[in-house]
Image (cartoon, rainbow, N blue to C red; front, top):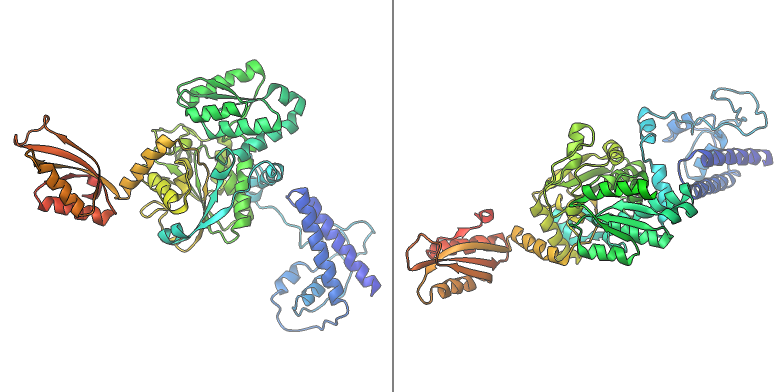
Length: 547
């Protein structure tokens, strides 16, 4: 009995050592997995040792597994299964020879045996391809360990209101709750830590890093640069919001205002790289940035293990590259969708061309995603993992922001809300195959100016048929406008604004046009108001959206 148990222990230690040397995870995770495996094997062996396992001719559900592992600890495997309650015909023990052939019966030479055939696996062409990409799961796993003490682990909150509205289980990953208001902190911290390891603290803390950004990346880099003692220079275009410029200064960053847009700001930053010896950190394409963003994917799988789909906003493609790599590695059957604003569809343009190409950019509510060309590293990773990329309209973005504020009390910027926008009724991901599924939506940023927020909310109310404008013809005699307002009041409409025009008309001299903005209760209410105006002879020129 002692000899048999010793054999079990030797083979268990061999398998544990093989796991430590070959599994593609962080060393702490390797050790935990190995110790767990070691403990389970020893417990099963000792529990099963006193038992007598009789041979059985019945078919076992584990028979195919047993056939694969015939050269790997036949008795240990059998006893482990017996301890778990399975009946399994035990085989005569024999020492593993350390030779590749499973049929080798020669005795062991006393050295550590080679990994058993059960664990030997030939990598497929796809696995080799994925390991050659600019960013792999190993990079994301290392980043997850490196940044965990410097960034907030945001929760995945189930939204009952949105789940009922969309007909699916919606989980919101609240990345806007990071200290600087966006997911960019993950990549920024990982990039600085990577440079500190590669260049050494003395050099990097003397020269510093530089980036061109108008918003979230600048804030994240400035904050974590200060925290890690690395000087940060940020080149911001003239259109950068003053609030974000002031925040970057408060974090101790050197701010340079240069260029009419982010492209010109980046060109100026590249000139400073050579002249001042700074290290440039691209906000969406540097591999450490992508790996840092990918840690969101790890947290999604850990917090929502039943996830069926992840819907990710797409700008420069760094976020979706990292998230899709992590999610697909840990749970390959999860669908990953990207969402771009229709006025800045640079990732879809890259897919069509087979490589990153410049795309036409029009001002959009999702200004944080308005990147004219996706990053080459990010695109190379994302195109191997992402299932599909769709677009969303300005109307859908404004509605998504409105839904989040009203239902979840969450203030999210346009770019951060595009994932939800694509899931709204009538949007491109409003599909039967996603109904009833568990869907995670990262809300990746909340840095929206208050003045912009007010305009976006009004657009959202208009898109939701809760605010409309129309032009009506009324009498220019006393009481003409009063009769109109009385009708609207009786029908439950609240007048937000009213303006009447006398000069620029081609109608009767005793008539005027009145432009009215009213707050309503929804589409049915809007139709009711329109019909009442027609019946009372006001001949309204109504918004086409409800015609």
